[in-house]
Image (tube, rainbow, N blue to C red; front, side, top):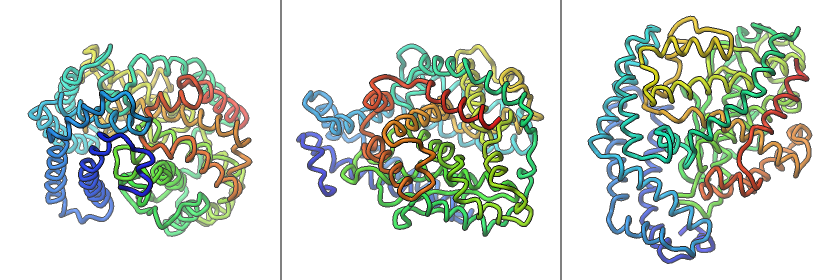
Length: 507
Ligand code: MG
């Protein structure tokens, strides 16, 4: 048992579950570590053996999960009405996984894995050649499989509910629709105001400004220092696409960033974003170690942490002031820029075709478009062949632009080729949630702006997040956590206040 764990887990059945789960955790830990290595340091030639090892360890961990004795314990604990929050959390997490494994037949999972691994290669080629036709037959198969998956899993109202539940336990299609409807009440007006402003810029020279990668790497390390990351427990490495790998323990978390020839903002913001994900893992209560509750609870809450640090800390005036001297020394051409220029650049709003490059105001339109198209595909209201045109029409409607080609349009994201339907909404919801955290934090600690400029302030912000969110790991679901802190459900009111106040002042 992890030290002090007995204070959290007193129920006898739960105490029989935990040692069994610890072995599953250990296997997962090795898989996560191998995945991190695969995306960072593994020589390319290692891919086949790594795939085999990952597949076999996955099978082994499922075998342990499906042990009859283990399942019986989960079911027994599920009937117990005396469990505390932590114990209930353990049972909830395990029942969710069990339900998933039990409802999807093995042959179906194998077909899903085969189809998506071929589809990912096809997607890569299609994107390279900017030709949707290469990917379209694969996507047709995937949509078909995703529909079957929803039927196998079952759902309260809409088949898309089953897909959302994979990433955000219990989230309903109708809730996502309501959330987006309330964003529509203010975002188009705000964007219209910005694009009509005299200060609106269609292109900024810093986007094409080269930077010294060695200096950028040093700046990223300095940012981690300012944010008081503990190098004993956190590493920063390089990956083709930035990600965070948590290992189910606050002792060891890995983040990655990326480097390009130009536009320092991409590397800087990726580092701060991933740090936000990492902090959620790092500040979990160690008494949850080796249990299903170790690590962040859901895709939405995880994204709320990364977006909080990226947007509300990283793009704030006080924070930019701290790193301004390092930013302008990234290249000889940058010494011309004042603090105000860098601040404006990092908070530039402009409709564009690429989701991952989108600013805080236009970001949600990218997600709404994907959600509406996914839903239409699942409802059979749209055929895969009609997607590129439907995509372009929605970009025209929401952002007033059309993609130049398939690569910067319909083919830009990897998610569909991996069979991930139902994931995108968590990006937008997570961003909305980050504004709620900001609001609650400011009620307790005063304006965030006043905190992020000093070491004591940063420490207070981290402490607040640990106390309210991080310490619990996966104990609570999204709705439970929000209800505990606010007595109600997630609204867009705080996102609206934050965006309106910030961007009407900048533009
Ligand atoms: Mg993220």
